[in-house]
Structures are given as C-alpha cells and as structure tokens.
Length: 162
Length: 283
Image 1: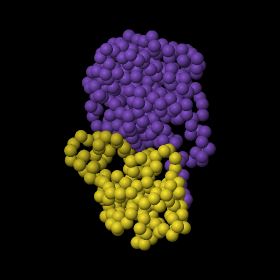
Image 2 (image 1 turned 90 degrees about the vertical axis):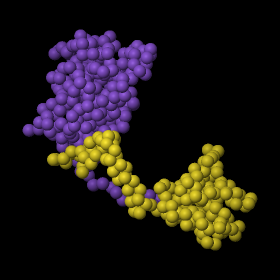
Image 3 (image 1 turned 180 degrees about the vertical axis):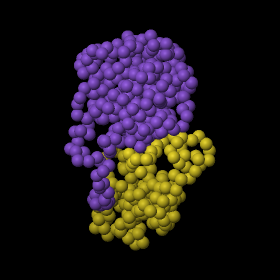
Image 4 (image 1 turned 180 degrees about the horizontal axis):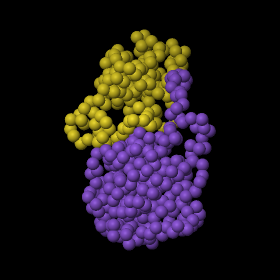
C-alpha cells in the first residue's frame, strides 16, 4: 500500500515487529517473523534463481573453467585460443551466486574433469562458497590479485603448463 | 476532526518526567492543528528514546537505522513531494551518526522537517555523551569528562544552507507546537532543535537549568538576516538559549527544482520495470 492512501497507515519498523508494524519483544512473534523471512529463500530458489550458463561441451571437454561475473569475456576468449590449439574446454559461468540451488548445481560438478576455478582475488571466495554449499573442492585454481584484470593468455598458459 | 487519540499508538515507555512526553504531545497537537491525520503525513524515526516514538505515534512511518532518518525522509519526499514529511530524531542520532546526512540535506533544501530531541546524551543506551554534551560532561563513556566541544546545531544548520532553523524547549509546549507547525508549513528544509531534559541520565541540563537560560526572541528580531541569525545562534556557546525562529528564508526546495516533478508526483507516474532490456547487454 502506497503511503498517503486515505484511511490507513502503517510503520516500516527496523525492530522486530508484529503484523501491524508495532515493535515486539515476545518470543513467538520473533519465531514467526524469522520463519516468514526464511520463506523468501525458498521462493527465490523456485522463482528467481538461474542456473549457471555452460559454454562449450561439458561432456566432451576435459578442462572445465568455473568463474562468475565479469570474468566471462576473458574466459570465453581463452576458450577460443585453446580451440585454435585443438583443446576443448567448457566453462561454467555463474550470474546468480547466492543462495544456490545446491542439488542442481552439484550435478555440474560430479563428472571426472579438471575443474579450474578462475577468480580475480587472492582467496578464491567463490570456490570456498561452493565448497561450503555443495562440498566440492577445487584442485586447480587461477587466482590473480595484482590489482589488474585477468587476460585470456594467462588462462591459456595455465592450462598448457599442466 | 482528527483527535489526539487518532495519532496515539502504544503508550510511551519514556521515563516519568522525560522531556519526550512534552515533545510527543506537541508533535501530535501540531499535526492536528495543521489539519493532518495519520494517513496524510509521513514520519521517519531515528534510533533512540525519540525514535521509539515510532510505536507511539500513528502515521505512515519508517523506523530507520541509526542516523539514517533524513535520507529516508528525503526519499519519501521525492517520491511524493505533496506529502508532509517529518523526521523525528535525537541529537545523538542526527548530529552524531547522521551528521553527514543532516549537512547535505541542509544544502539540498529538501522540504522536510527535522524535529530534534536535544538532550546531550544517548539516553536509550543509558546515558553516554552525545554530540551536544557540554565539554567536561561526565558519563559512562566519558567518566573524566568529555574532551570534545559540543556541536552547535543552530550554527551548523544555518551555515549549511537550511532555510528554517528554530529552537524550542520541551518544557514550553505552546512554543514547541508553534515551532513544529511553522517548520512543517515552511517550504524547504526546516530544523526544530528542542532542548529536552533527560531526567535520568543528564543531571546538568535539567528543567531548572533551561528555565534559567532560555528566553523568547524579541518580536522585532530579524529572522531573515543570515548574519544576525548566525550571531544569535552563537549564544548557545555561552549557555544562552534563544527560543523561536532563529533563521528563515525563502528558496526553491529540492523537488521545486526538478522539472520531472512539474506535472505530477513521482509516485503517480508510470514506473519503468522492463529491466531485462538493459541487463541483456551485460549478461
């Protein structure tokens, strides 16, 4: 309801509150509210969550890059360069990073492949998140944290060295 | 006709004798006298004893984060510039946590009214020193006395560009009602600094303290003279507290200067929602 509608009023409360917006310090309304908010997660996963996009042939390729967000273009370019050298690769690219639909995402990581985590930070946070959520641990990772963007050639070299 | 009862939510939890009781009644009275009702006014609260009024005053309301009532109030105003918007805050909340927001809201001359419960302490958290506490004020957070000098809210807001700056005293309900009404009626950014005794945690700035040091501005006082107003506001530094409209001037408000809002309020316009058109470019 838009504020200003005659005959009504309500408060958006930053304290824990009951249905009409008034503050409460009781235990049961607190539990009800937490449960209500938790339902947003289920609703998000069923209505809004998008699976990562897979570029290349996941079945055919031995090398599988895993990354998220703005590294997309660089990894796609690296895939092209590898293709020129007759090396097939796949790329799992996440746009929706959290919360994750664990069961569906885990399916992508069950194959016997060389998964390489590509992230522009020193800790590989997204890799840690995946381990926490689906129990998958990366054996290979390309992390760059010198304050500069990743280049396609660096990724290609990483693959060729192995 | 709207009554006090219409504006009354839960019974306040303020301490007996707290200046907030007087301010709470004054706000409701001012709204009634302006012909408003709980559906026609928006109120945004900060955190503190003053902010707990969220549960005690009926209105379209937001109980915002600490110090963030002003940006929320500005948001409401820009969404519906025809709606009166008040921010109900304390000196800790508004001059401390939200000091930055206050300064820039003054510059923008946003047409909102900021009502400050100025008691010099963080009463809700049991009386730590707040930005208007006088130098040397002893509290739990400053057991040997506060080192900083107090903020002068009047000078700060006048020199930052506020177009209406008034001061009242919680023990003087009639003047407080008049100042709140004048602030809401003023087109542009208005601040009403209300000197408010905290009977539990501030044993210095008591009702007696203020009764001995407040005085009403003379009828001939030139409230539209910037330099005189600045000079008048400096009297606080010598523990003299003028009550009344210290400074008032006419200037275009923020929403007045937005050509997009000439024909209708933002909330009445059709919303652009097809964000897929834009996001396609990036994913």
